[in-house]
Image (cartoon, rainbow, N blue to C red; front, side, top):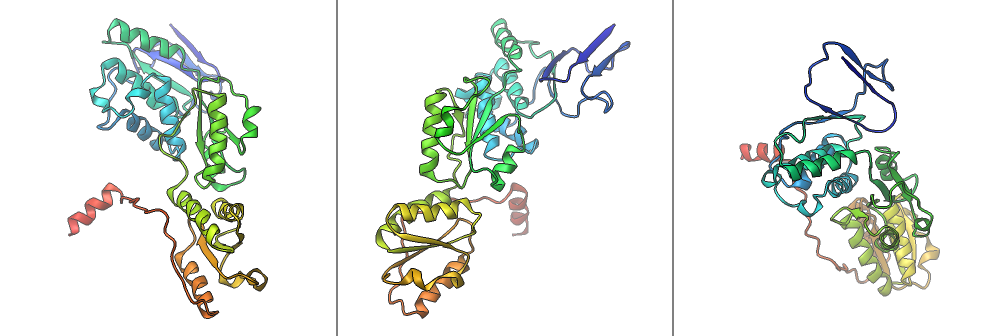
Length: 345
């Protein structure tokens, strides 16, 4: 006789010996009986399938399939590996891990998918005594989740999209001062991600404060701030030292464009944000001999070229390009498209 009731609160674990419907009794889902049970379910089989990639990539792939956006996906994946004790093996091929490690990796793949229930099909079957002990201890701790701290600006599209994926698990902060009063359910289980268009300097202060308060905090291995944003901020610091005025082409709701204006001003130049060449005001140019021009990460190049042409028409004698960083980042086409292109050639 089976009587199993899964209550509405928290994540519940069922260690199942079979997936067959019970011959008698019932399984009732307290939160969603009318809907026929929870819609978000995850399962770990006796012998989980390991993808031909690293342990970290295995977890990241599962989160991608659950539509978790980057960079939150990478932060969640690392937090999950930390949770199951495999972070030190993040770059190891999953298929060479031991049986117990593979089972823990399989658990890591489902931990941060926001499932209502996890079904574990005899997860310790065939494991040695030590591996069984570690896995059993891990299963008892499964309800403990990481709190994800996102550094960003409230109302920004990227922030709204990311926090919307798991509003119950993500806390948004903007400044280092907010870290002092930040409270989380478990200080030993905290991860952070950043809005990609924030200032490098600004996030550095906040991250330092987070690491000081939560020594065990985990994060994405790579910098969440996009390379274009970082490189432009480096260039503007140099540009501001050589020019009296720095004009930044970008949208008023662009965090990285507004920050470029702030960086220029912090380093001694007057600076203004404009949509295009038509917004340049004569008053800005009075007494100015050298003007610097830059743009936000997503501003079209043609807007920059048109602004340069405006100053040529006004008699600018010398136009030069300031290079501070060599950009060698490559964006690969999806595997399917590359295969199709290769087949046509």
